[in-house]
Image (cartoon, rainbow, N blue to C red; front, side):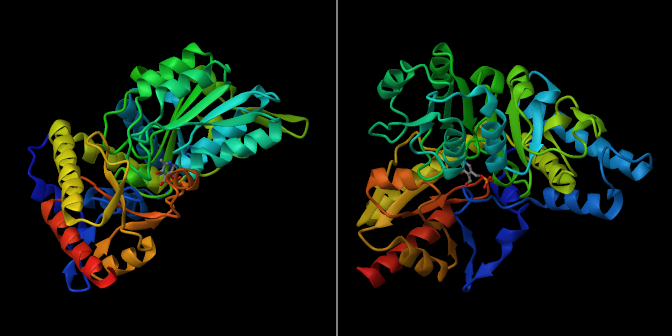
Length: 407
Ligand code: PLP
């Protein structure tokens, strides 16, 4: 079912947004850190705890059967949502960070000393540090992929690096610090032609774009539930079956085995092999509700709404003056990064908070990018489906006050 685009009705589904902060309506512009949750997600999780609470996959009783059915239905929902070819290519994790760590750990037996790993130089630390750990363990060499003037991946530089025949290429679909959008399909295709394994970090893309992992053609695509109107504690590791099946499990124990004896253990098949232990069942159920929520939205209108808000936000910041924008252009997705003249981003964040505005200030887990921009950090305003023009106007008024106080 697709609902008509009535923005007020969509916004009204998010109970957190109905509150006041500092006698002002809460103006939530921190969706890139975590999105607010619609009532349907909260209800689905409550329902599980109130009526279905049981462990999955294990017991013979009805509650467990119900929990298992609902849990496994979400796997099917995720498969449809990202168009993976097989159900067992969808692994539930606790988030993007864990998903990337699972790949970096699981692939280590395939990586040799001096193998090259190319990493997006604007990546989130979650897509840098696990590769560094892998390099430490194997003697592989990490090479950052340079950025172009728009601060997305520089294709010419990327082409040069591919001549080194990298073992693996990891990059963001959308960067979290700046909201720059990389041409995933082209980058993956180039990396594949060079024989590399590809991992795309979709944490910032998943709530904004239709994701088709078969069209992208990557080996791994990862994201978190909490950035797509779902709960914290659940994420997805999508992997092409042949690649996923080769990963050594980072976690071992219950759920992931076929047989165990003191003579040795035989691991189970995918997806269980990569899902050791009791999963975050309620969070998975909540993720299913979040997918239903997104699927019921008119995608094209949502995209237009978010894009026009972002453009309006960029324009208003430029008009305000004394604002340094980073990597802002019309192709960005969901995020505007800025500083107020040379003022400290933290001071700006605190003064905005005192006016009911929630933005994020800091290095945004992208220190190598901050180093390239020659700044310690910046403020980041980010947009979700619930934001409206009033939010942007409230934010700009508050920022004008900040400017008057600081400059
Ligand atoms: N990658 C990107 C692009 C992100 O924006 C984030 C979170 O901000 C992460 C990875 C890490 O996600 P999580 O903390 O949910 O594991």
